[in-house]
Length: 133
Image 1: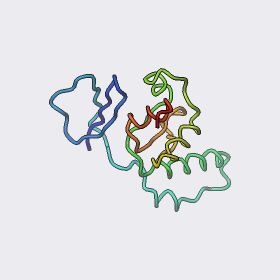
Image 2: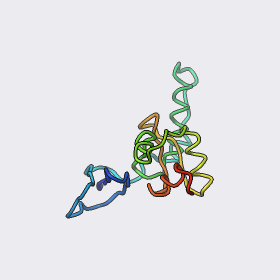
Image 3: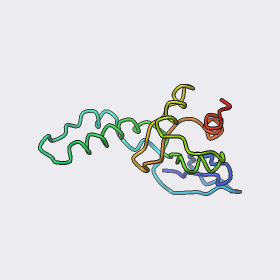
Image 4: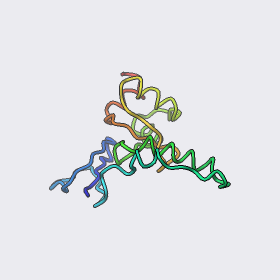
């Protein structure tokens, strides 16, 4: 259990176990689970029932959850990143490619159709979006 902290001004995010004594422009969420949200091995071993009419959709989510399994408990939103960098939002696929090309882990998230998870810091994301990386 812990807390997620998001700086409204910079977009920085971090997870903490204890609430900091002083919060400037930071928002806090919690207490909540800050560990892995999925068990990758369990998900990889799941078998979909081929008779389900929603099998295609379930397979899509299962693949997404497997990718998300060991990512940070928070995500970034393309529209928020664009607002912070004063740029047009990149396509989600373009953002994933840029992050991975620079050695970061990255994946889409089931929490938002415009969201992504990464181990990159907001400064790294900003540099990639602005083309300075």
